[in-house]
Length: 234
Image 1 (cartoon, rainbow, N blue to C red):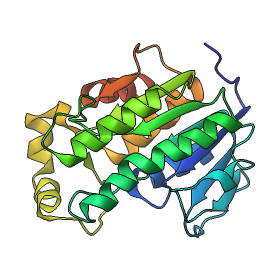
Image 2: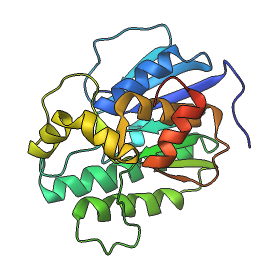
Image 3: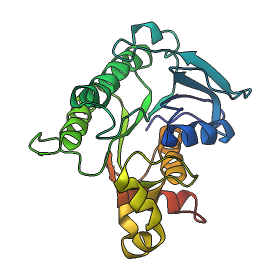
Image 4: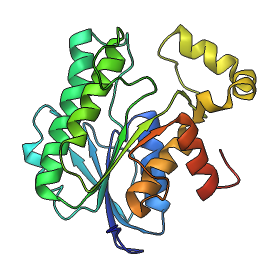
């Protein structure tokens, strides 16, 4: 396994204005093995750090202009996404399928040896038979990424992602889950993951690889990864 050595990793974060992506960027900036972190954003972040390079890019349907920014990178963490019901079905498909595929195309052409951590979701259906659009779209994106040729591709399928910090929840289901989180976590520990823990796992495997085996990590796998690397969390 060709994993970058300590203090040499150049990492790209996509979706840093979102919940998981925001944690991923903050963790990457403090990670001792990350030399530089490039955040690909639609609007500039109100943050500065010696390791941070921000690249504003508004049209993820065409990432050709990112070729230079994505060259000589060791890994990428892709957290860009949308909640079901928050956008139209057509827009959900574009964001969930087209955007990661287009980004991966340019990243692989610019840095063919890069690792790629992709935020999918529990229930993602690569067969395309699911009645749930989100599951079908995530499955389609997974299939396309697996065919891209990345030497290290990691697909994360979290279940309920606990926000940790207060936020405006996107719908009633998320408001309910947040309210009952302590009980839900006790009863169904493998159906929840903290947003910061998920972000750490995605960054860690992009930087250091994993001995877990396989390329697809379900919620149970992600929790196990977090406990191995960060025993005090998870």
